[in-house]
Amino acid sequence: MNDQRRLGQLQHDLVAFARIHSLPDYVKQADVHDCFQPPALSQEAYADRVHRRFPVHTKAATYCSWLQFLRARDHLPTATRQRIGERFEKAAAVWDIADDMKLAERQYADTRRPVNTETDADYAIVGPGGRVYAVDVREECVAAVRKGIGERGLTNVEAHLADVAKGIPLPAASIDFALVANVLHEFVENHIAPAALRELARVLKPGGTLAVVDFYPEADTAAGPPKDVRLAPAQAEALLAGHGFRKVRLGKAGPYHYALVMGKS
Image (cartoon, rainbow, N blue to C red):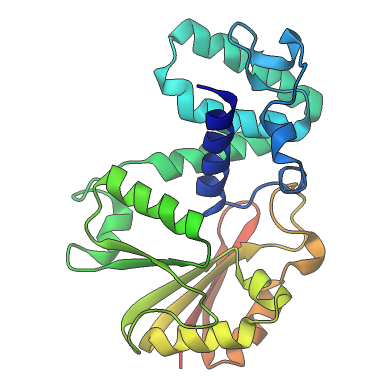
């Protein structure tokens, strides 16, 4: 694979991963060419020294290479997989990102898990007659979701390119449940929260449920948005209450996130 194709694959992997999970700030702020493979790196700067793959010369490069390794790992011989994995462990210790890499591994596994229509709990939520609609404003994210739909053989999931604040391409009162994951703070930061929440209220059925998953402001992790733009659960609740939603419950959604469940009044 030539350099241009590798760069394209890295960009695709980052987009596919970021559509569900927030990337660490040190990756968001890095130059993608620096993360990929800058010129004149020594052999020691790669997790796979034999083939000069998976550069680990910077914190961001190590994280991005780790995502690429997760994608390729199952296709590598056992000895090669172990050798490269040991190099990643050392790099993670050098850059102090072992926790970020472990979290990324768990999250990546979730995105690749095949669906069992008889036993999968997520499938059972909507049932064989239900449908899931994924909406995103970025073309590359919608394309990644559609690719995943095809790879997993899903027949009850649709992906739509749309700006939630300008209009969700669904009829009024047509859905039972809406999930807003890691984006409510972006609605507020970009000054589109009123329009976006009005549109979510429009497509939800009376008595429908809106679930917000977002980062705790105090969560001490490199992943996710800057702390000064995060919304505390009480702030999110007040915002939603002002648009016709009432609190049902508040809980944890992992070590860094809260889940706020609101009902449409």
